[in-house]
Structure formats: structure tokens, C-alpha cells
Length: 193
Image (cartoon, rainbow, N blue to C red; front, side, top):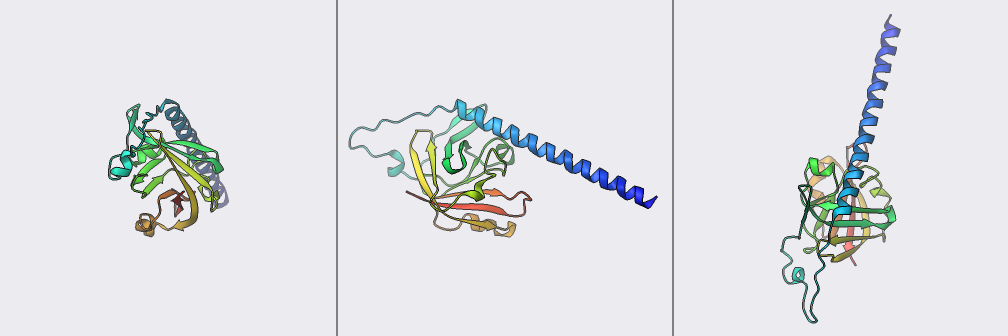
């Protein structure tokens, strides 16, 4: 009798694990579709500078990043990671609901060179972030179609109790995601080129 109960409990655990895996896969597909839909709707407003004019973000790096609202969500631009074949929109604010749709600005801006972007660890977002190598190029395009290019200078793993270290350091761009188990964070540090 005890043996049959253990088998039943084991089968129940396997069913729950399978259902959770299917649900996670569904959420990842939904997030990928949401990002692709938003990317298709982004419209960049290219500024044309007159000869001798200086970009406004250089004069005032504290300025807010321009946004575009799509389906009620504010986007600040897109991130391009050729080494991972990723081209994703970036939401202005980092919330759990927003992370389910696209990568999000966690802190800073590309103008002040303290930009931090986070995303879920799914194939369609930052799931392969740990595969980036030193020297890989990343680009961020703001809503005025200004391109900011970066190169990867290092990758690290931060534990949950090291949350403040995510914001420390003199890095122009930081990308992060959680590991599959969610116990730690994969952090990619970049400098402007």
C-alpha cells in the first residue's frame, strides 16, 4: 500500500512539473509575440541636425528619454544584440507586468551612460545572455533613431543578496536576467564604443 502511494505522489509531482513547464513555455511564447508586435509598431522620429548643431542629449544628459506609447505601454527604443540574433523593444519602466512583454529600462539612460536593462530569462528575451563574449557588440536605438553602440567587457553572476551591486560600477550599459532557477542574476557589463 505504501509503495502505491509513493508512486501516485511521484506521478502527481511529474504531472505538476509538466504543467509548470508547459505554462512557462506558453508565457515565453506570449512574451516573444508581444515584443515582436511592439517592434513592428515602433515609429522612430529621426531628428535632423543643422550643420554645427549639437545633439540635445549631449547638452543636457539629464533629459528624459523620448517615449512612444503603444497599446498603453511606453517604449524608449530598441536593443539589438547581433551575437544572439535579438532585436527587441525596450519599455520605459521595469515592472513585473512589463517584463512579461519586453525588456525594460531598470535604471538610468543611454545619455548619462548608466543604462541598465533587464528582461526575463526566456529564449525570446535574454535567455541566452550568458553566451555573450567579451567584445560582442550591442546597440541601443532611442526613439529619435540615435544609435548608441557598446561592446561587452565582462559577464558576472550576482546572488540575490547582491542586488545593489547591479547598480554599482562605472559601466555605460548593463544587461541582466535571472538564471533558470531564479536564484541568481546573469549580468553583462558593457562600455560605449
